Image 1: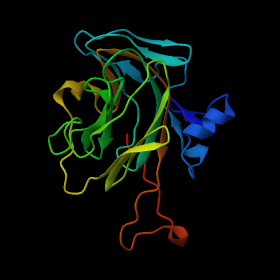
Image 2 (image 1 turned 120 degrees about the vertical axis):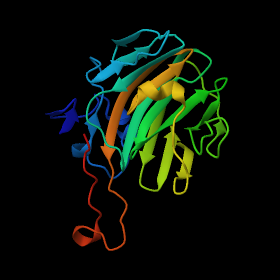
Image 3 (image 1 turned 180 degrees about the horizontal axis):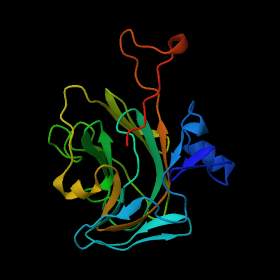
Image 4 (image 1 turned 60 degrees about the vertical axis):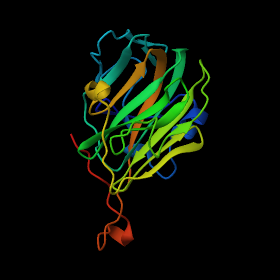
Length: 233
């Protein structure tokens, strides 16, 4: 069973078994998944009211973010704020800047994973200790091709933020002692949103997985297994 837009449906997440396995992190049952995009309608996603934004449409199982200063979608449904993974696929169609600015909650604080920013190659978190993705410890450079899908996976736990692009780990930040935040430009993306900057993009297969929360001293479940984090609404 999978949860799609708040309703349970039988069957597979995707028609293609191979793609299903690629996007699903190991060890997490499908009964735990929350599918945030059904490939047909925006559902609980709303077009983000950025100034001079491009069009937001659903076509061929994809959310299309048209060219504009910033264009994006913001989630209005239930979400997790800690101990979760979010997976999606993103593609730059046209333009030369970030095609996936994923704003997400870290407990009460917001943060953004920027993919392809600052001229098209910067990856990192904005902001860490008030420094954005181009100038903090998470900053890396990576080349991205247009019209190619990239699998993006983000994990948030009490002590870490981790991220992968395809099979490569691109963020591994211990958050203890750091100030987590966002740039003012993406405030409208809170609490969960995806945005682009002077770039058109396509997004698909947006899925959230609850993750077993980290064990605290003296705090384990049956046979020492940590209890799963509750869904926050």
